Image 1 (cartoon, one colour):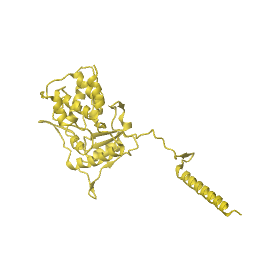
Image 2: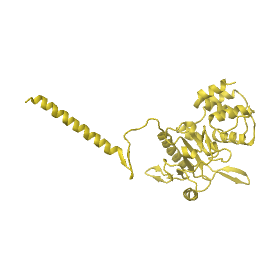
Image 3: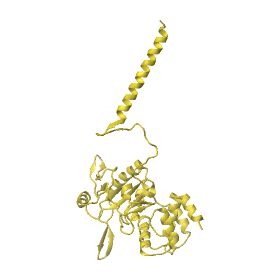
Image 4: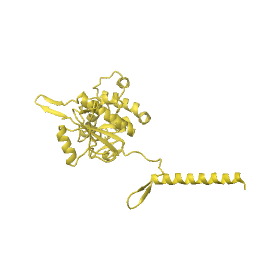
Amino acid sequence: MNYLAAGRRLVTRLAALALGTLLLAACSTTVIDRGTYYADTRYHAQDADSRVRFLVMHYTEIDEAQSLRVLTTEGVSVHYVVPDAPQIRNGQPVVWQLVPESQRAWHAGVSYWQGTTELNAASIGIENVNLGPVDTPQGRSWQPYPPAQVDALIRLAKDIVARYDIPPTRVVGHSDIAPQRKIDPGPVFPWKQLYDAGVGAWPDAATVSAYLAGRDPSMPVDVRGLQQKLALYGYDVATDGVLDERTRRVFAAFQMHFRPHDYAGNPDAETDAIAAALLDKYMPKEAAEMKSAP
């Protein structure tokens, strides 16, 4: 008997048996029983991405207890609620999660940003417990966002944008995506603090100064030119050069986000410079094409 040949055949059979066992094991872990059919998940398409492409900030206008009641019972919802005085557990703040991130929450309503409409389907919403504007005989004031709340919000937002790879220009306020009907999260929202922590967009001061070029910041500028810049950045705004109330609301929403000391909605040089600086920083190719267009 040729013992060498027999040994080789045995090794081959054992290898085939091992391979078959491995394939069966792989099959058993990828085939899912869904009751009325089986789904084999061993193959994965490469052309796919996350449902989540935007992060939207809000304020509640009511206190924490009322917010939780409304957001769990009254036909409106949000993924997260950040208390104004978060509880601390093991040295870390506690936020409320009301909707799984994989599901749609009803927080954005009729909305638009960078060509996407109905942002409920493509975003995570964060409500911050904050009363917003408070009107008194002395005028309107805005409730501040306490440091503990800002810290909790930064931790939450950093985690979300990292996991979903959300670009800076897609971290927005409700007023950005629905400027005709919303003003939250308001002019005292800590956008710059979020940016410093790695969340969201902010213009570089030197670039803004360069675009101002010594002009008075309140000097009027071409309405159509500012409309075009904000439309390119993401806002739903006409580019017809008409300074009507709809356009003013968009200008005011942009100013509330990036120039909160003055959000009157006027088309001024500082607003125009901030818009140009943001485009240079985050959309340089599109900005260059806009500048070269006749």
